[in-house]
Image (cartoon, rainbow, N blue to C red):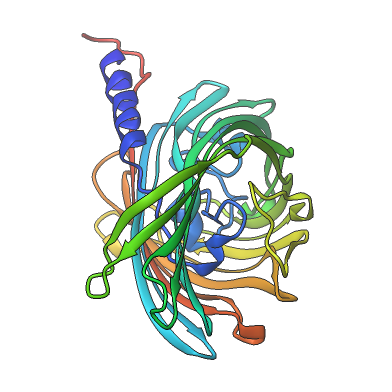
Length: 417
């Protein structure tokens, strides 16, 4: 038992040093602390991001109260590949990224349930070019915020549970602006590099309810709340004169000077989610969720941007699953979980007076594999973000995601040795 726990902890620690942060190519990751990553498993993403459903063999990373329903130790890991086509009035381009989305462990302990793991929280990855009569400016950025979490839940009654997760947020964001001569009049370019090391702690509290009705129907409800988070940012700024190779684009520093920039604290907004659904246990389920985030309270890191503001964000999610025959021994495809959903999300970001919204439709399958309800989950999502109005960029994206959900009995009492 101790060996299994130590091995799992080591895997998470090693993953913390190799977690890929550049999980986006979106130009909208330029703003704030990057694009928010989905906090949940691939199983949730297939259902439009729905988190209200919890069961005994899958980890719920969105509502900590759902951990109280775990009956088996669960190890889960997920990854995704995103292809996006970015269009504006001036042209279009394509981009693709592959990232590790999460690694986590869930532990059932009687009336208690616990979990710990790592997930990316935000992601920065962009390259923008602005051409002028005298100067051309290119903007690049990378990095993001990661989150290490520990969660605990308690089953107050067979129908009602509560939980809390505590998150340590950490990461680095780099932004670079390179100003070059448009007509070749100036020999050297000017480069400004900003680096922010971010850290802070926040927590989420959750409630979950389930009740079995007549006719084998079951209702579920959930509520989560994350208070406003104060994050600290250690800032660094450097101004350099550089020589840029006209053939390769390689940069050679001629002169550089560090500019003193004070460390800052900024607030990341509070959020609450409420959801409900109905279904038949081990057969089907459909649910609906609403999320409100006080993005209007968001403050930037070290610089202000014209024509950009934040307002409160609202998200709507609809999804569910269907299992033809949970106990269909010998009929493999009857035991497969078929999931689907859709989502509409306001990001809270307003650029040039235009709301940056996102829409997605997803579906996928959960494939039984091995013993103790271990499964492989495969899913896809089609969607779009942004608009081409007011000189902005619209992204059409296609996501594919994969996860492994492995189950084992770690705390089973042995009667024979």
